Image (cartoon, rainbow, N blue to C red; front, side):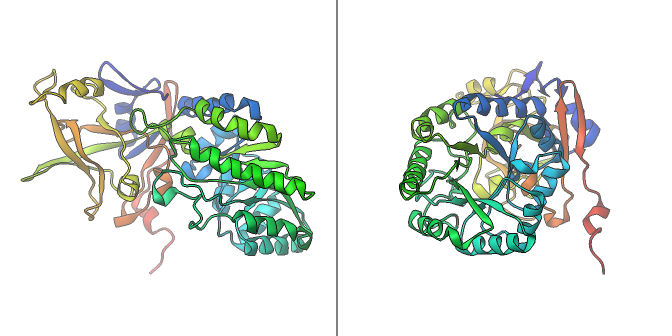
Length: 433
């Protein structure tokens, strides 16, 4: 569940009216609910209590310092993919000894930085990376912990761009190669091989791929044990899908129940890396209507947010729910109206119309929603793009030299800006002519 709801036809985040947020900070703006973040973290914690997991929040989903600080306060670890994400975690008060550093292309300087901080482990995805880690650890006179990332050859049933467990993807090592690497572990005196890692993708809404992937992990762990080497840690990655629209995702309890018979008998330390599951439904993108345009075949609502603010619809063909914050009728009422030949709302005859919600960027791919049945809206009205907490702000850019949005954190009846809106001077601050 999340803590965004309509009260007297006004959209609230927790106890804060979103129209008040927009009035105070402008639009576009990302608004996050602290209560929702905590709720979803606790759901993972409770569902997997049998495994006593280290829950390493995936920073790439939403890397705002205030969000990271909330999670650090809950005792979370962190899954990172760059030195920049490590820096953010440290600045937010995260514990370096709970950091897992993933990614296929770690630079030497990133490896040195992470090793110097004493992170929990590196996820190793190639022999070349392992050799680099050994060389750097030797120079620093340090021992580092690694987990080999297995590529289990599993199809996750998600978008091709975020499916990472297939043999043809760039991620991980096939089982035979991983066994061969461990057979050479004496060649890496500054590396402790403590774990095995698997991550098969993102926004996964079925349980079967996890079961299949973890069975591969279990076979690998047992094979190594028979050869005399004990792997102490299993990292199952993340990727649990969320509800962008009704009925598409599974509950944490369902994922837990499916993998428990595979994982529990191994009696190993267990790490998880959820990101989207924790923050996806904890954020909305607020945007204001600039113009309404009718063409021969289309009705366009042009708003002040664009693909540079939220690229998921353009990049992944993702569907985010969009609705006015002060609607003439509520979404559940609209479902009834949609079945009528000439739908109309209860107030002033404002109808549902088939609409494209588009932004100002000079690209035909700049849209937030296509062919949606939405209430008629007017210039100046406020729309909320739901489930925008994950991969929204973190994937935003300055394309078209647009200023990136503000970020706001709501805590009960209060809200505060946790990232100021960029200024025109910010655009050129690092440049010279």
